[in-house]
Length: 144
Image (cartoon, rainbow, N blue to C red; front, side, top):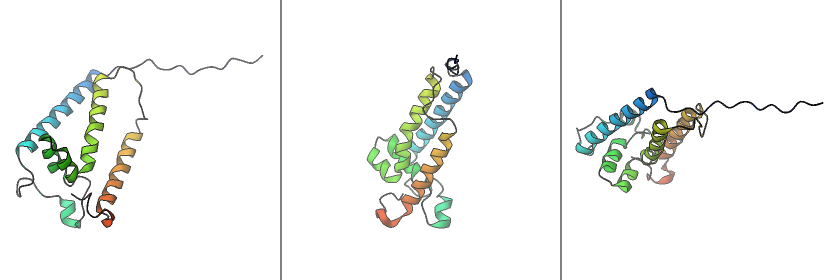
């Protein structure tokens, strides 16, 4: 006689904890404050914000080069101009919004990808972005 296959019991779905929701709202408030400041102060005018130290030292664009200018353009609803400054930021913000919404409204307890994959995936994307935007192959299209 064989024993029936035992299934591993699944944990009950978890709701967002109050701390997670509080932290998500705090993060959104900080982002909104930064967006308002960057929207009011034009980063394309010299002397408004400090220049990138990585770019000053190496002459290469870091992954964040052009982010302030891109955010300024996004605040003013100029998506194409923002993509010209930093395409990674323009692509990242909708992804960040989805993660934020899941943190605030999660009731299922399911995750699309394992928790440890997020930082690794982000690191891979940022390294690839940095390399690609500094290659002359694209004719400076991805440069800040």
